[in-house]
Length: 219
Image (cartoon, rainbow, N blue to C red; front, side):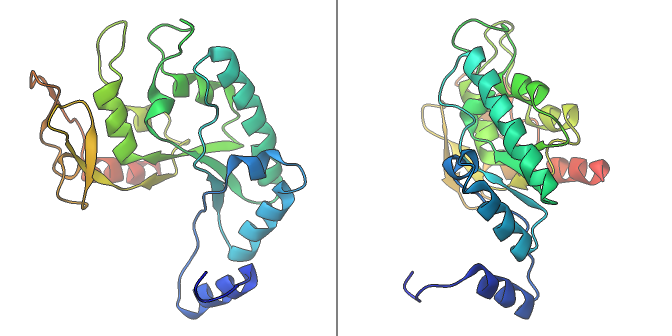
């Protein structure tokens, strides 16, 4: 960077100096699938004093159930190694994780529900990106019953799999088919208001407060 090289140990010293704590980090999935690089990433997390370390990479770029099941096996391998190092491994979600399988497998079941089923809850956790989860709510109605993705319901269904959140806010685009970023507090997620779609019949069901309250109930 512009200030020159800095070591992991120096970063830890700065955190300690200013009373800060590193709670997690996004690391490219390629570093985790590389057996030689994996222990290096674990050691970095240990030095920084993290409880969680993970990736913002999608489990797979494919939409087939077979690819997602294979990805779950890979994440179990990574998560087991991370757990052995005293940390917890997470995957940071975007909208496509909550889409449906492209090969017709498990009609009406979202990909990530099967991913959570296929991964060991002691080894693989998730960091829910609240903004992208609401994008999934906009873009991926259930093809079986037309229901929208229930963000709060997802957290409630898996109370021990979502230990952390990524907080961003958004407003609907003019066509009502996507969200766009705004400052936290200025969007429909913060207020819990607004509607999804042009018919105005699907309201955003949860805001940051209800989500954070649910986190408190998880302990």
